[in-house]
Figure 1 (cartoon, rainbow, N blue to C red):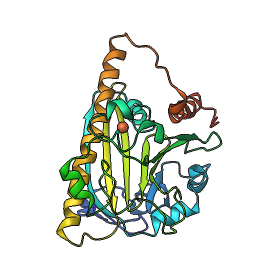
Figure 2 (cartoon, helix red, strand yellow):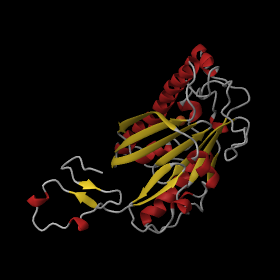
Figure 3 (cartoon, rainbow, N blue to C red):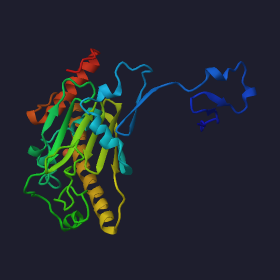
Figure 4 (cartoon, protein in one colour):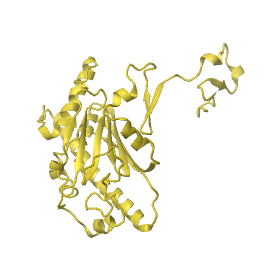
Length: 302
Ligand SMILES: [Fe+2]
């Protein structure tokens, strides 16, 4: 590994191997100038970095209830990065997370897009009070009869693949072919897990998306999303479906995230001081319980 700044070279163990112009330095001991160690571990094909050199909790323990089956489902497939976006928001980072872990907003926020395909009442949530790093998840199922926006383009797209969120695909999302770890519900669409504190991982059949939200200040954050798919696109129809899916999810995410800036403006104005959270939004409750325990430094997850 070569540092782009002055060209210092480190070997695969992190030891400093070569320094251009080494004679320019005075008392110089390369053996003491290796890279700093960090702890890394792998789950689901993702590399997690822990800045604590001796973590008190293993990654596997941290991610319960995401078990070995999920690890295999995600880690053994050949996922390819498809596309992603990054944007700065004038909102606290937690508001961006909130928007992804409850279904209650769907019928109103997404009334022009996915509300007919994934109604809020079909997105139940679970909390995991015993988990250290996964406070909650939201699942999504299709209703038997889909309503809402069924455009000609979306219907055509749905004939060629499974990326369309607005329309019932002829190539179902469901995990009925025995991949096993995911829901056996015939109309299952996705599971969304909150990986505490700032990652939301959506798992679908053939597609995963990872959202990360990074604080800049109390009222600003960076938000990133990456999409990964399995399988090669084999014909123009599949390419069309893929592109159609990309545009649809872009619109849905746009609807989601800009509400955060409006909420932040109300906070800034001192108008809104608290938010009412209902039973359908239990994942948000679980998120803030976990967050408050972390802020208090108790290390408890409840
Ligand atoms: Fe949404």
